[in-house]
Amino acid sequence: MTLFEGRDLTCHRGLRQVFTGLDFALPAGGVLLLTGPNGSGKSTLLRIMAGLLTPVAGALFWGDEKVTEDPEAHRGRVHYLGHLDAVKPVLSAAENLAFWGGLRGRPNADVAQALEHFGLGHLAKVPGRMLSAGQKRRLALARLLVSPAELWLLDEPSVGLDDASLDNLGAAIARHRSDGGRVAAATHVPLPVEDSEELTLDDFIGGPEMELAW
Image: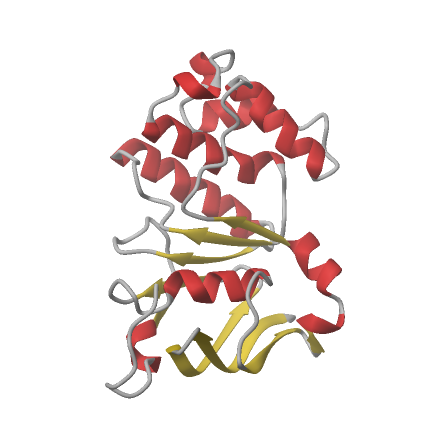
């Protein structure tokens, strides 16, 4: 079984040490929840996993291969959802999803089904600029369904979601896992997922003289 691993990772931001000596292993079908206080490095670790940041020491592995040996292949297997929803204001909700599906080579993705899954079917023709913050977050999450990738990296995905939407996210994650996908998520609140592993980032913070980084 192919593992996605981080081995002995150390990350600095400027003169600040975010974490050191950090290891993780994420198998197919697995969920890794990143927890810890603000500033403990949850978002930073997700960016490293996505290939957007480079650790000072240690490395990422996909199976036996370092991710840095084929970064293009890694980008193709990752869907990173950060704090920003990246909703294009002039496009409708449906057009936003069609755009993202097209970027992943799925111009005929089932946009309507993805919108319905997150309770946005009735807003399909509404421009992004007219959506509420919670609706934009659900639209961002719906991108996961139309632009598939094996590894979902989710930064505080529950922000702005009501209970029903949180359940819909849990259902999407469950389906993704059943298809062999894997998920790493930074979160302050419990997510509706089963059999997840937890990685507490403040276990890997450097000495007390180091300043915490976001």
